[in-house]
Amino acid sequence: MNFEYKNPDVKACLKSLAFGYCVTLTGAIGSTLCMRSLLSSVLATAQGTQVLVLNTMIAQISSIIGHFLNTALMRKGEIDNGIKVYADPKLKYEVGICRNAGKKAVLQTIASRLAMSFTVISAPALMMIGLDSFGIRPMTMVGKKIFELGVIATTLTFAYPLSAAIFRPISKISAEDCETDLNEHVEEVYFEKGV
Image 1 (cartoon, helix red, strand yellow):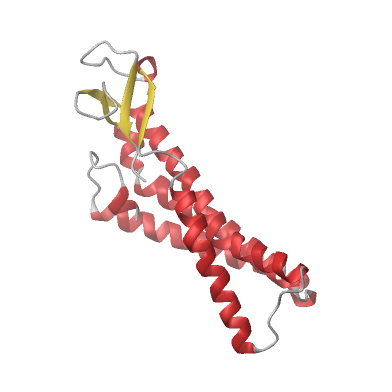
Image 2 (image 1 turned 180 degrees about the vertical axis):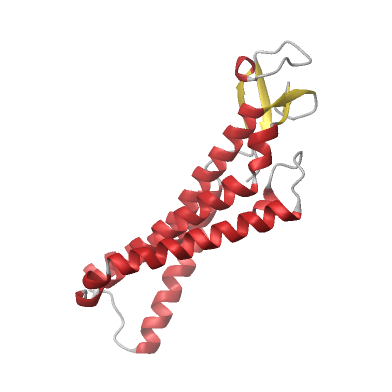
């Protein structure tokens, strides 16, 4: 996803993408194993809703770590080298390169990925707990699986698009925040942040 939706002005090499994936997987899986180990006594005695809440919490934290590492490492070139900035919001008149715009683009992407992570992982659990509190719960295994799939489908249909739309693909910063001189004198510069 980062490779496909990165800022199109930045070239990413296969080596940096592979490194990003390896570190991301190691961080997410490692954090899951560490949390499960630390919470093993609590998990052993947990029942019902407690199990769902604990498993959701562990998955949520691991997902946040994975998203952060994934975005930060795979888009490191934008932070190190900067991205193209433009004088207009339609990105037609390039005025230079700005590292601060690259940092802002990556940070906004990380924030939107954290929201995406919450909606995809925690929202289904919260919906299931909420419906259970109203006594809406299936009693058979088939009914339970259909119920769970319905909650997940509802979350993916509504919550996922909302989290992806948190930030517009075009962003802006003050021209004074750019480290280098720009080709033109402008008050603000615009840039494509990627998704």
